[in-house]
Image (tube, rainbow, N blue to C red):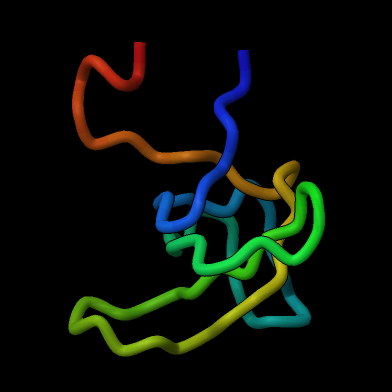
Length: 72
């Protein structure tokens, strides 16, 4: 079962987005949903400063979990 992506979910890219200068594995936060399965994702540095925004399809990302029971 695939979890639905929601506003403020933390995701990681599963493929490079060279047109945006982003690489597979970069972590971002979902900030909007543009269309079904297409999300606006903000990518920020360690200080919280945004360095990129990108439209990302759900097939290009994976949801990240920070609590053991959520990942099961």
